[in-house]
Length: 632
Image (tube, rainbow, N blue to C red; front, side):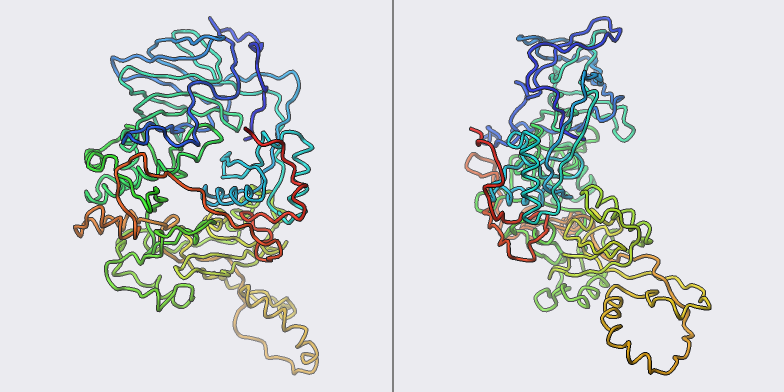
């Protein structure tokens, strides 16, 4: 889904064919956001308040299918008010129900929209690091999430086909293998419409409020249940040619829809309190995530799970009230309050999972209150140490949880399909491969996380790094794993002795075999005829992924916090265990939400930097990267 470029400015309403409505208002406003929207990339103005208002995209990409429909209703005895622009005046309508859907506007001529996608990522964290690297090189960029996270060349800067192609040519000439131009041709565009009191209105943007700040949202999408939300709602266009339903909600009300669904209602009291503090901290530090779409956070696991006021629980409400306004800081800056379901017995440093500088408080912590493993003496970068660690199932905080240890088996066709899908989203030149020939772990961190992994195909070798491994392979539940090949025995054919000796070989075996064949060719001519092997030949069928944990494994383990809470640990002690050196503070205007890290531009001669989608090549002639005048 791509940016909708309908018009720079609409001075007058567009003409829409008659649709048989009893009454229709046709004014289509500017695609730029209007008075209802708040800047998503600015720090919240009311930092002195412990209950600032957040902008949460609760329905993203509304209009991605023409039949998308939302029904908004108040609670019993209340009414809704819809506010929108009518010409140069603001107009309001009071009603019992608002139905939102799409109108497809035919275009007189096809419109072509294109953008330069510089890199594609599984996570915001790596995408932001890539964006910072490119900015340090003088390339103006912006972060987007059409599906996966992407770094785009800034559309307002590279606004003509010539500028976009010159930029792409320069990027590729200087080593970028991930950049491409994404193009879309449209013959019609979706416009948001709402029906109220028997009338239908077409507007790009409008706000919906209720008397008691409670609005129920029902969707016709099967995977979207009906939910009740606190606060107000607004519909607005996004960067992908569709719309977003944004919930304007106070922080403490927002947390009621996050905390019980992130850690579960049955967690110990202090574990829920720790989760509330982290959720509050995470939200405020990450208000910049969706700046391109003019809101702040999403409502799923790409941010934090947020279900509004549906299924709130007293235990979570109490924990939120007990920690009201509390945030976790390091040197008076909000911490990167990352957490995951299950670590697998050891937390991961930031840079083990994503690109970017390490956070001093996100270290490798053995997730146990017992002395079960000495990481300084037995680093998990050693494969034997790692396998011994994974074989241990006692003494850890997460013992008893299903995802503490796991084994997942995938056949080669499943792995092939997963990797192909991943490569296609990146427009990778090897996306047309037909056969997986092997997998190999190339590098593991001292905390056990796989850092680099090779996928051998019939078209060439593909290297996966850090959390991109989980984007390309659906088998492992985390990057804390090792692999075992799965073979099947086949009946030996009469001429099998003449077949290539590939059957049953691992990737390292194949490499060693290729290196030795030329050296042994002369000796083979004089060697006696070998005795046929009695061992039946084997063929590679798939791989088993054996590991522990679920998710990225950075920061607090939610299942580990259950155990610590059961042991009687306080919430601040739990947080100190997972985030050493941090401090609890009440939210106040002196606290920094985040600081952009200092970026070191990599040396273009470094072979390890070439082709890395998060580390831009250093242009040999920077003047060829053509920006327009910087924005004021």
